[in-house]
Amino acid sequence: MKTINFAIIASLFLVVVNAETLKSQPPAIEKKLDIKQPAKNTPTDVIKRYTEELKGLAEIKDPKQKGKKDQSREKSIASKVRQFFDFDELAKQSLGGNWKKQKPSDRKKFSKLFIELVETSYLKRSRNLVADYDVSYINEVVQEGHASVTSRVAQKDANVDITYDLHRKSGKWMIYNITLDNVNLIRNYQSQFNQIIKKKGFKHLVNTMQAKLKSTDEEIPL
Image 1 (cartoon, rainbow, N blue to C red):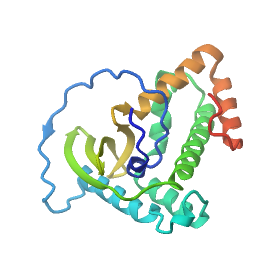
Image 2: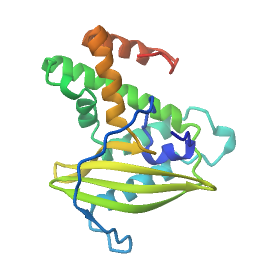
Image 3: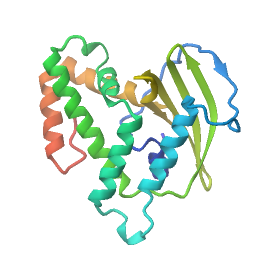
């Protein structure tokens, strides 16, 4: 996987874990994307607003502020991301089949910890973002209440494709997964979490997540 810092602004919250070979996705009905069509609140329109609005919020105009914490800025970023992203669905899918095996109270506890960890991670990463890039939208797939939108982020000689998975929730399209340069966020979390649960149990996973949230060291292994 390429490590391209500027691409993080497009997915923003993305926590990169070890890449694995991904199985091919089941076929879906694709439609050609006409980016000149007027806004109709399509999945692509939602992703356009997401990337453009976040770019405006996250761009660091003063080089001296790069790497520094700006509480007001980060609060605005977090609020904006939550408008577009269904973190509860991401938390649920990140456990795969283990989600149904947990008690409702444990699911709620896990989801809260997971969302806090993801949010803490992307806000820390946002302090060093580079906003000098171009985004093009190259494909949209819609299938029974679910959709995927692929964008291409380009800066100088580096390109990376980002695919957003969305679903309908409360009458609007919400993002719940991202594939960055062929690395699928949900599948990587599933692989990591399921291995831990298999070896040491769900309680160990939760305890480790709590420790990681309290620590300033982002490299604490799960």
